[in-house]
Length: 175
View 1 (cartoon, helix red, strand yellow):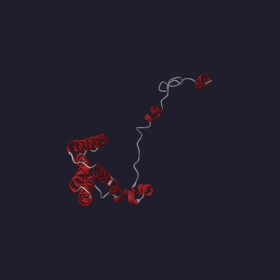
View 2: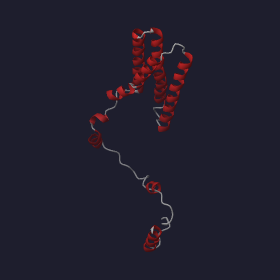
View 3: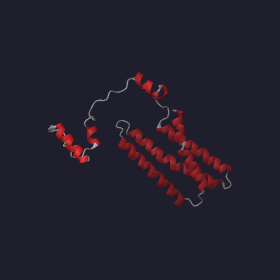
């Protein structure tokens, strides 16, 4: 029945122009929108952006990637000191906590440095590559700590790692 409908539409439409496709060819939705892709898009004016997003959303953030890394270092040091003072085994717990936080803030620091160095030519591909390097760097540092540090205490390492990792959420809230 579908084939008959297409044939009837074809006969009713008459001859198609050379640019149009034949009805029995496969039509792809991506091809339909590709022609509109080159159309110009007018940017929002300031008043339209304020109306759409609100005044607070248009303010520049006070939190830079460098400040986020600095906050991660502070959280790591505070957590390591707390684990060293209050834990049953002071030194191993403190060092484990420090190494857990370090596995978070060292790759983040390299990522922030990479962002700073590429600020004149930012690209999405650069962000994705930087984030991939950060993830693999974090995994490598965690494996290195697990293999090399004999007195490792898992709870301080993981708690401090998660605290340093969640510093991003605090940074987003500060805006």
